[in-house]
Length: 248
Image 1 (cartoon, rainbow, N blue to C red):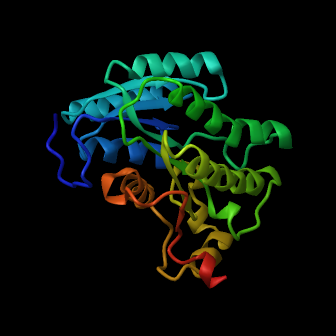
Image 2: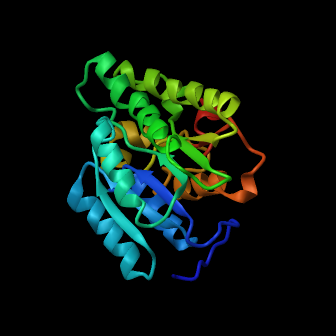
């Protein structure tokens, strides 16, 4: 087990599932989770990408399994949980996977793929034996808080993430402590080149800290919310956007 250089009070070897771990924010969460001593079930629909993440964790001395999985499919979710069980019982879950805002999707289909898949993964997990002190973080977006965006399904889905998080925090707190992170504009592969575009430059100019977020900005916030240090935080959403939304 690699010795953690950052400590949030996690028990070394506890197991975390990160969906959408093949790139961007999910990849950063998986890698930083391994750095703080967690064993990582890395899930993604992109098999080569998620295997690379798991290999990187193992090469650094951590424990990880790569689980190629479509989180809209019950059978694939169950198979991914079975594979992750090789690491131990899952204590932590990060629901990060979901379609990109640029995806050409019909409204109802898109909601089923985004907030619907989060509920599906969570329900599968909570039906299985788990350690005490379970926690999850759902990845939302500032598009679900104050920023209007297109297409129409994207802000609707991200707003639904927080509504469902509050439901979990109120009615299923005996099973899991639930919070959410709402990233602002983040420098991920999905946003490649955006900051250099005229629109991107105008938006970055309105972010008080003067830059896009990084995947690590989102990862460390997520891990804090999961950690024992945040044990009295429940049903909350932390906006991680450099002050962008308050400056609008």
